[in-house]
Image (cartoon, rainbow, N blue to C red; front, top):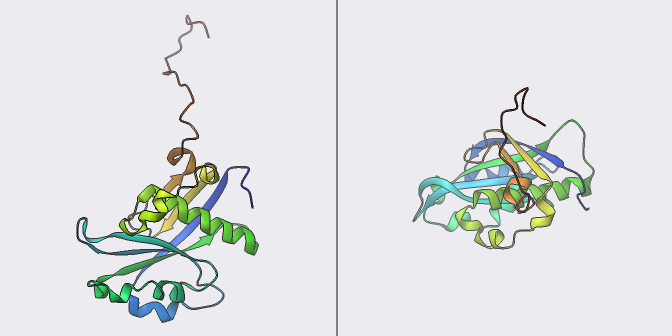
Length: 172
């Protein structure tokens, strides 16, 4: 699916969950989306955003459990926040999957979680230029609004002039 017009993606966030709560996030109808993991980082400190991921073709509970968060020194203190797409119109499966992927990429690039370093390096600039993400609910450290126009080079070559106050005597 190619994005050709400005696309608004809305995500409703909730949490926090612990790793032991993952079996509760395996509903085959509703438990898909994007997730954030918070914990301790040796440089950035405690209770910081460590990772943003997506659960597209498998439930959030299954996907997060595959990432070995249980085997870190701080596994008892990890907090997980899950985000589900929402809006006025239901999406077909292909569009939904595309939106999840684009939203995850833009959120990773704009927030730069420590454990998403590989994803930050492979930023799909052109794909994200027209994406606009609104984060609702308990989105924690994520910005409430993230725009591909702001985080890509789409507007880098636009020449701007400073606005001046127009008076009745000033020619337009």
